[in-house]
Length: 145
Image (cartoon, rainbow, N blue to C red; front, side):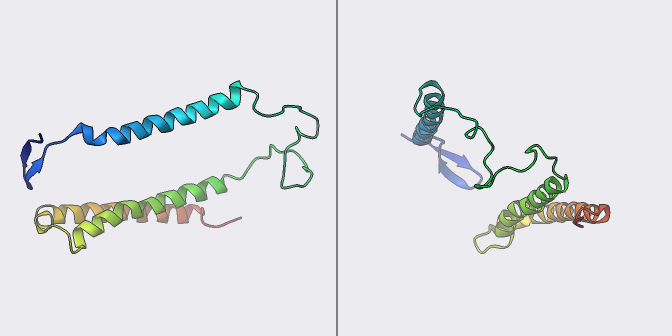
């Protein structure tokens, strides 16, 4: 029997761990499958293993390898990837805030209690991102040389 609990939102059913048993069972099955697959591929000879000189060459899209495969990459590739992640992840933070703050289903209680604080927090967050963007621009990260 579920005993209701009084919360600021009203009477709600109490937390039941048994409702999450299927999720835990699924997680256990996934972990066991991953570990079992890795163990089976390394412990048992499931494939023929006859290494030759040609089989040990690095494969490059059907072309014969030219030069050393251990070339140093320009750090520019990593910088562009990190900048993409930084400026893309900001949308992950802004979208839920915008839905709660300005959506039709948004709570008026939330807007009056935390709306101003949340707005100031988001403005500070966007200002820091703008500052980071300006810093990267001044350092010349966006120019591809």
